[in-house]
Image (cartoon, rainbow, N blue to C red):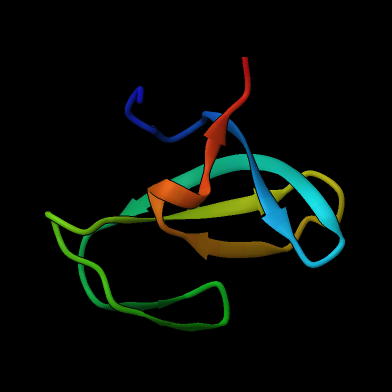
Length: 69
């Protein structure tokens, strides 16, 4: 799997089906993002993504994201 980077267009499964958006940043330490407390580290990063449809943000683990071709 290719590494996910800032600016990548990605898809992920959402309650309403498949969502699309853009990676805004990699999170590598515990922080508040996407409306919740994020537990992350250099060996366990998460990614803040902005939804193309709603403009809202969410945080996902790399295994939940698929880079758009």
